[in-house]
Image (cartoon, rainbow, N blue to C red):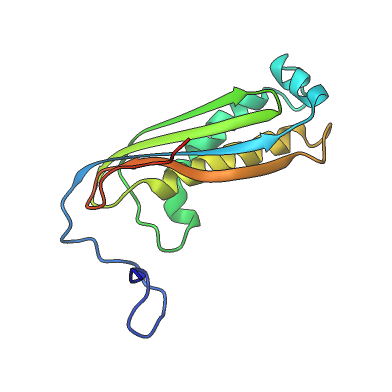
Length: 157
């Protein structure tokens, strides 16, 4: 079984020392899904939700969140983010949020991508909760990562 890297010899949480690691190009993409009913989806598609532009607001929230992941997750390193792309797709049963992050750094951008996707989904929920309290956020997951010692990970469809 692989050793956990964020614990010391006594099992206490610690931030990993990345000082000796080389800077490489790293990318990560994560996604999340907000399950919504047909009536709510019609309002989102037509941009007629009372709180405003659901997709545009969620996209901006996802970008902001990815840039601030290190402030939210205790052992995450601050990264020199080069790009954050958040896409929201209105599908048959809900809205899919996808966040892609790219950096040149000593550690990966997985947490930034996951945080961006999660906050985009939370923002969709916040924007539609007045018309659908039963909205459900599901399937937060890492879909892709590249760079670093572990190489490429791509989730199978």
